[in-house]
Image (tube, rainbow, N blue to C red; front, side):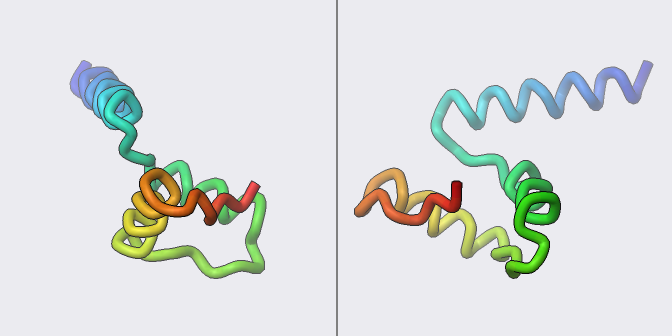
Length: 64
């Protein structure tokens, strides 16, 4: 029961972040490890700055 509540909380948190445009760092790490294992994974701070720049700046920075 407790694990079900935790999982529901994670899904709700992810949905809320996506609604306001915040990227999901865990999904990024999983993507990089499975799709681009030869490339380094950004830290959370680097990832957050890059996503802000992609959204509000020049739009560059998408890998796929």
